[in-house]
Image 1 (cartoon, helix red, strand yellow):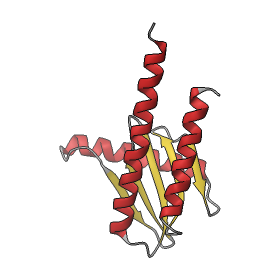
Image 2: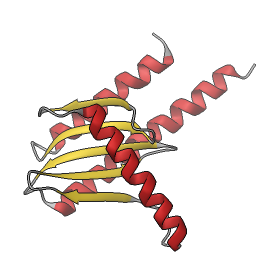
Image 3: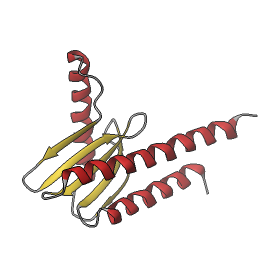
Image 4: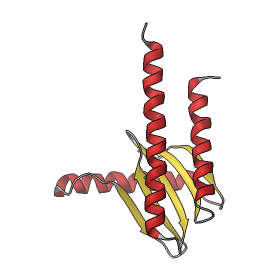
Length: 139
C-alpha cells in the first residue's frame, strides 16, 4: 500500500469516528485544501461536497485577507448559522481545512470543542505523515 493511500484511509477513519462521536449532531465532515478541493469526506446527508468545499475555501481566503488588512490576527475558525444547518470551518494544517456541517440545534460549545480536538488529531496525523515521508526519502 502506498503511503498516501494509508494516510487517506486513516483520515477516513478519523472522520468516521468524528461523526460517530457527534452522534448525529454533525452530519458531514470534509477535509479540503484551501483551493476548495475535497481530500476526504463523510456525509450522512445529500450535499454537493465539491461546491461546499469550494465556497468554504473562498470564504476563509477572503476572511484571511480581511484579517490581514485590519490587523485582527489569523482566522482560527468560521461558524455560519443557516436556517437548516450550522457550518463550522477550521484550519487543520498548512492549507487544509476541516469543514463540519451540523444540525441547526447543535450545542455550539460542543461542536467547537469536539471539532477542534479532531482538527488537532488530523493535523498531528498529517504532520507525522509528512515527517515520515521526508525521513524515508533521506538516504
